[in-house]
Structures are given as structure tokens and as C-alpha cells.
Image (cartoon, rainbow, N blue to C red; front, side, top):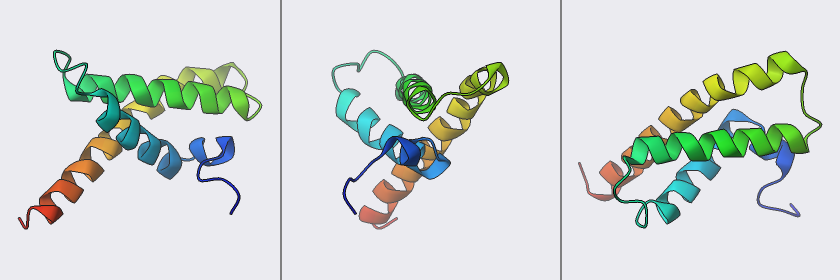
Length: 91
């Protein structure tokens, strides 16, 4: 394994959700006035747009569906992080 993340990995659902969760946790403190779910969606959208462009892009239908996929990635990232927090807190 040469890299932790590659563009091809970030283009997958699991890769995008993991990257979104990690990036959101690092940048949410300076953006405390903005709801975390909104920050998470913006991060997911940027990750998916960059990954789509870096992996050769798509036709117009692929670009149209990126914002919809970002919703799913954001929800998964938020839920995954909440599950980790619950587990660590013993609940």
C-alpha cells in the first residue's frame, strides 16, 4: 500500500465518507457558527467533485449526480462519527 488515499479510493462511497468525516472533524471548530451537518455536506461535495475530476471526470450525467451523492456521503460520515463517539463513551 503506497498511499493512504488515492483519487480512485476517494471516488468510492467508503473513501469519500471516511475523508469527509476526518476533514470535517478538523475544520469544524473554526466554523463553529455553521451547523456541522452543513460543513460535512460542503466537504463531501468538494471531495466528490475533486475525485470525479481527478479520475477522468464523467459525462454531464455524472456531474449532475455528484451533489446527490454528496448528501449520502455526508449522512454516512456524520453517522459513522457518531457511532465511534458512542462506542468510546460506552453508550
